[in-house]
Amino acid sequence: MMKLDRNRPHILATGAAAVTVGLWASAFVSIRSAGSAYSPGALALGRLASGALALGIICAVRRGGLPPRAAWRGILLSGLLWFGFYMVVLNWGEQQVDAGTAALVVNVGPLLIALLGSRLLGDPMPPRLLAGMAVSFAGAVTVGLSLSGGGGSSLLGVALCLLAAVAYASGVVAQKPALGSASALQVTTFGCLVGAVACLPFAGQLVHEAARAPLPATLNMVYLGVFPTALAFTTWAYALARTTASRMGATTYAVPALVVLMSWLALGEVPGVLTLAGGVLCLAGVAVSRSRAGGGPSTRVAAGEPRPEKVP
Image (cartoon, rainbow, N blue to C red; front, side, top):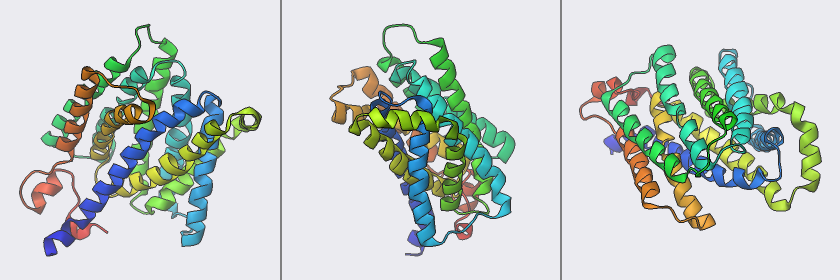
């Protein structure tokens, strides 16, 4: 029983990461649907506004209050880079290139998180994490190449997806210190609000496009705001507060594998053998990167896990 209590924070954090990955994977299907009726900036603003409203209601009910002053630098940076810039640029990039190319380029993000986390946050880089990231990246490349269309990719689209990956990685690294003094709900709520404010120049486009958009596209936009944004970014922040940025970044390598599965089930897009093999590699790499080395607490701390007795 004592061992179960000691491992409970790790189990909860792993569960939160799994919820995040699942919902972020579902976002690819919804973006594809909503993007046919909404421009990149309008879609980002609608998504962020929906997410900020849902999070604001939860904060009001729970009386979360304002984050402490020490957290605002990270909240502002992550709100501008990740919630705002990333969503606009990714929406735009996915209109220029096929989903496989976009997934391949954006999956540079976890590698950038590992490099930035090691440089700026002092994150350890244990062999298991490096090995798992290498396996997952190989899987992401395999999935991306198998899904890519036969035509040449747009140079603009590739550049936009690369910018999205840089913004994603920078936002994660900026968010991590804020979670040391503010709750996951506070960091997510106000980061989402900052991103929504940054996207206000697209308000005119959103109003104009919402008036003539089909209902399924609008419902997908709202879904993106409530679930892959409000819920998934909160569970992400909860898990990130309990592990390193590098390890959390490696977890998102499971997204391409789940996108393949969801496209198969929801859209009837039967994956080929190469796609399935890439998906298996993605999941295997995540399993390796999330696994713990054997040994006592000192071994786990060296691997980047917090000491059990100090986890809130």
